[in-house]
Image (tube, rainbow, N blue to C red; front, side, top):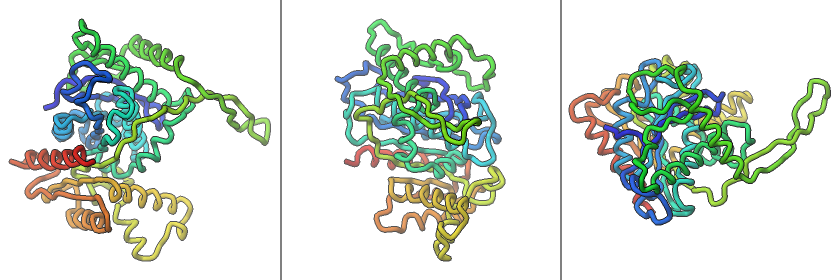
Amino acid sequence: MLPRPSLSFTLPSLHDNTKLDCRIYHPACLNGPLGPSDTLWHQHAAVVAHPYAPLGGSYDDPVVHLVANTLLNLGFVVATFNFRGASSSYGRTSWTSKPERADYKSVAGFLVYYVHYLSPPQHNPNPTLLLAGYSYGAMVTIQLPPLDSFLSDFASPAAHTAFADIRLRAQHLAEQQIIISTTPSSPRKSLGLRVGGDEDTTLSKTRENPRSRSPNQEERIRKGVKEILSRHRLIHRKHNHSSVDRSEGVGRDETFLESVDNLIRFRCSFLLISPPLGIITNLATMSFSNPLASRSKRKRGVSPSSTSNHGGKADREEVEAEMKLIRNPTLVVFGNQDGFLAINKMRDWVLQLGKPEGSHFHHVEVSGAGHFWVEEGVGHKLRSSVSSFATRLIESP
């Protein structure tokens, strides 16, 4: 369903620098030259996360393709990626989903800066960033902190960190795309460019061996990033580091990237396809906290301050994650024949989040649809629901 990706590359995870396979798809309006005269593209962007890797989930999942293709046809730049342990991404799926949240934030942060450098500043003052996920990917999306919260860590990162590397790669790739698209003789050889691995010219859907990636390609990327870094204005700050020989910290100069002027400001929204709420999720991840739990605690009069520090922090994060779905446009789509969720809990959850005054939370329950969306006619209903929601997002002032 999806066309060939405009870019195929790797990114370091913010959690531990694990290499993650990523793809970027450009909408048709970006197939021509990119530059200040481009008025067709409105900078809307989306990330779509895949199902549980140990059960075969990857960015080649058919539902991921359906959602990504729907958004692509509406003019979104779309990013898909493999969580750690999925397909040819490095690492293993975690028991807690914390590393996977960092994986997702890595891709979302990259996409923000990529779109910024791909187009003139303030080209569209109100573009949409849609954070989406299917199944396990939807669960991780629910657990993400608010967008501004984690983007702040990209604002002026230390030059040696994954935050800085992701920013610099985004700028490098965006500039390369502009150069290629404005070169008359270029056949857009950037299609399938692999950053941090081999050039992907065949784009096979079979599992590739990560150990076979070319170190020469990674070296070329490092040189490109180093060249971008040499053009950046850097900030020098003193940071205290603990010393084994002294009780006090030792001041050390560190170099930081300067924040980007007029960084594109997205309106954030969320799309959750078949989030597996219920016992199946707990068995699969050993960690997923029920979004209803914080509400039940509030009903019993339990506040974060009355719990342990660890429990209180978890409760606050849970409430914060839930509130972002109320404050930002959110759509949940699920089937009433989904064996991976407790349907009554799901119905209760979506009704509760849609109740508060001013809530932007909406849901669609598709009759006859299971978790994998293979039943007759349900794929069309899923596509229609996603298309209607995304169209409202890009048409709202």
